[in-house]
Image (cartoon, rainbow, N blue to C red; front, side):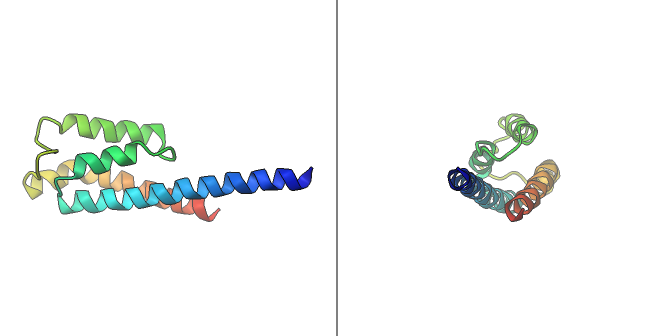
Length: 108
């Protein structure tokens, strides 16, 4: 019936809205950690990479960034600011674009 279809569509909408909200929150935290050059960078990026709403190509970029910087002590502490900002600038930009995309999708 139309009512049962509408209930299922509403449940699907709520699930997607929750996923997008969770993704937006995780992305905002990851960007803050990156910009602050916090020692929690690896954990924050891994969390974003595990979200269902994040596209596979974005997950690949995050995993590549983490793998590339695993030897540089990314997990142990923050490197010098100049080198760090240069290396993570592309990741921050990608995360900010994903955040905008998810906000647009959540409003749609």
